Length: 635
Image (tube, rainbow, N blue to C red; front, side, top):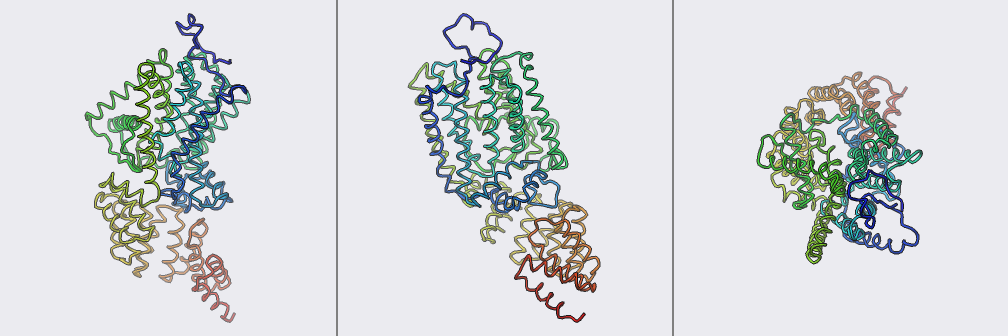
C-alpha cells in the first residue's frame, strides 16, 4: 500500500501493528474491493439528492433573474469572449468599466452552456446544482476515508462526516440558489485537487503539475476565494503530514507553478476590471480599530453559524464593530484560541489542526469587509470551510462512540433529523421571489435593504402600489441610501406621479452628486415635463461623470432635438450609438438621429437611420411614417 512520506514522530516506531496517522492509501479502490467500497457512495448520493429533491420545483429567484434572464451575454454565445473582459455584473451597466469586485467568467460560461442546452428551464439549473452538491459530498467521503484512516472504524467515521456535509443546513443557500453555483464548482475543484494530491502521495511531478495549474486557474476564474487552494495544499503537508518546511519545499515546482498561475489570474483581473478591486469601499470603508474588530467579530459569527445553523436567512445585516463590547471580547478570545489550536495541535492531533485551517483559510478572503459588498455575512461562504468542520465533527463523534455508543448514535440521529427538517423547510422558502423575501422580511423587519428588494420584486410582478409602499418604507428606514430614491423615482414615474418622481431623483442626486444613473432618470423626467434645457443639463452631467454611458449620451441627443439644436443632436446620438452595445432602445436613437439628419438636409442618411430603427423595431410607427415622408419628398 502506497504511503505518503513524512517526518517520523516519537512513539510510532514501537507500534508496528497500528497504521500510523500518515498512512494514506491511494483513493482508488482495488478491483476486488470495488463491491464493498461502492455502497457508501450510492447511499450518500441517494440521501443527498433526496434531501434537496424539493428544490427541483423552485423557480429562479433574486439575482438569478438578472444574471440569467436579463443578461444578454448568456443568450448570445457569440459574445462569450466578453465575459473574460468584464466583471460578472457588467450587464447592469454596460457603460461602466466594472460595477463590482467579482470577476467570475466561468460562472457565465456555465450559464451560456446551460442556456444553449436547456434554455431558461429552472429545473435543469436546479438539477445541476443538486448534482454538484452530490459530487462534493462523495468527494468529502473519499477524502474523509483517507484522512480518518487511523481510527478503529474509518469507513464509518468517513460516512458520518460526509452525511453531515450532505445535510448541513448552512449549505441550503449554496445548493438551491442558482446564482451561488460558483461556490459549488469551486469546492468541487478544491476537493478534487486535494484528492489528487493525496493520490499522488503529495508529490506531483512533471506534467501532473500542469493539471494543478489549469484547475487552479479555472477555480480562480470561478470565484475569488479559490485563492485558498494553494495554502490548503501547503497546510495539508505541514499540518496533517507534519512535514518539515524543508520537506514541503520539495514541492517548490508545484507551488511556484500555482503562484505563476495566480499572477496570470491577477493580470487577467486587472485587465478586465481596471484595478484589482474597483468597488472597494463602495458600501463600507472601515479602518484601524473598527476594521480589526469587525473582522474578528465577523469571523466569530461564521464559526457560530457553522456550529449552530439557526436563523438562516437570505439577508444578514452587518453592523461594524465600533467599540470593544463583550461580544467583541468573546470573539477575540474564541478566534484567537482556534488560531492557536491550529499550531498547538499539529503534532498530537494533525487532522484537527488541518481541519481548523481548512475552515480558516477559505474564509480569509471573505474578511475583506470593505470589498465584499452590502451582504458582508453570507451563508454560502461557509460551503467549502464546512468540509474541515465535518472532519472534526466525525472525530468528535468517534470519540463519543468509543465511550457511549448509545449516546453517540442518539446525538447523531437528532442532529441529522433536525438538519433534514431545517433543509426541507428552508428550501421551500426559496421557491419564488415573493416567498423568499416575505420569509426574509419576517426575520429582518427593520432592514431597509430587504424592503428595497421587496419593492423591486413587487414591481416585477406588476404590483406597483405595493412596490412603491415597500420602497417608501426602505427610504424611511434609511433616508441616506440613494439607490432607494432611484428605485422610488422609477416606480412613481411608472405610476404617472411625475413631480413626486422628480423629487425622488433630485434627492438621490443630492445624496450622491456623481450618481449618473439618477441624473439620467431625472433628465428623462424633465423631458416629459418639456423642460428640455434642464433635461439636457442632466444628461450632460451624466456623460461627464461616465463618458462610457451610452444611454445618457443618446438621451442628450434627444434633448438637443427637442431644443432644435440639430447639429449637437446628431453628434450626441452618433457618439451614443458608437458606445452602445446591448441597450434595448437603440431603435429610438436611430429614429432621433434620422430626425436630426432630416433637419440638416441629409435625407439619404436620415432614411438609413429610419430603416435601422424599423429593422430593430418593425412595429415602430413613427419611424415608418418618417421614412415614408422622406420617400415621398421630391429630390
